[in-house]
Amino acid sequence: MNEVSTRFSTVARVVPNAAAAGVGELAARLTAVYERSQKSNYVFASPLGPFHHGGRARHLPRFVYFGPHTHDESLRLAVLSGFDVRDLRAAAAVLVFVERLAGQPELAQGLNLSFFPLVDALGSEGEAVGRHLATSHWGDHANPEVVLLAKDARSRGYHGFVRIESDSAESVISLRLRTLPAPDASDRRVELVDPAHFDAWPVRWELDRRPQSRVEDGPLSIADDLPIRPYEITLRLPHAWSAEIIDAAVPQLLRQFILRQGSLQAYRQNL
Image (cartoon, rainbow, N blue to C red; front, side, top):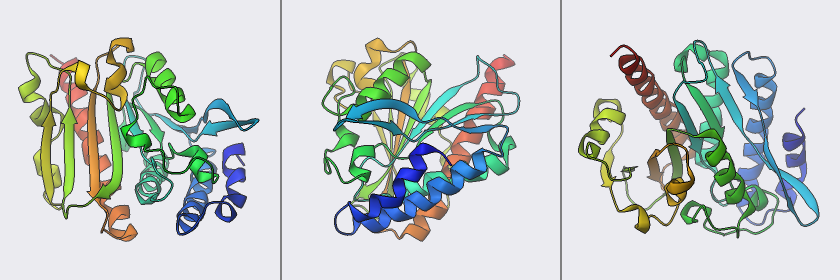
């Protein structure tokens, strides 16, 4: 079993209050996905790190999908969740999709995907809880997990990032597309995300095209350091939703979004 997953056996005893249950459930799903990935030819467990904290080496859980017909020039996307250990429902739902992808690799054929289901690695071990990692500037060295993600982004050259959170006070999904200003930016929402894919779920759309100098969180905050100018999509799910609803919504939305990216990539290659 992977080193990262074995460490979760004691996590629930050190994380305070209700978060312990969420960490325990996530531990079980992480273990299941690690075991499934060992039997997959397309989904690989590849923990990111190490980083050192408190005299110990730590890692961020990461799963990499390099599927059928994927090659070095394929579209590269990163999916991130688990920014706060106090609510890991979105992280658990992302793992549902990764496990499904291991069994049905054709779902994302031609794409190169990296999944980071648990960004708040220190929080999951009962340390440094409540650091607001979702709103951290990626050039800030205060949080070692963010430093690792920024280093990975600089080296990998992702075309896009998908952030999934479950902290919205609203009763609908908030979907924010953030791009750096470009002449064709007005069409990016329609191109990257097909509104028809959200018919089963209530969605409020946001389009954020602030100047780069005003982007203070997430991967676009270090856009000048990245080999490709990426886009970022943030899905914020209603906090009031149950884990069961989130488990149903996140895999479906990820599947539709990824299928859309695969279709767009094939279209561009045939132009």
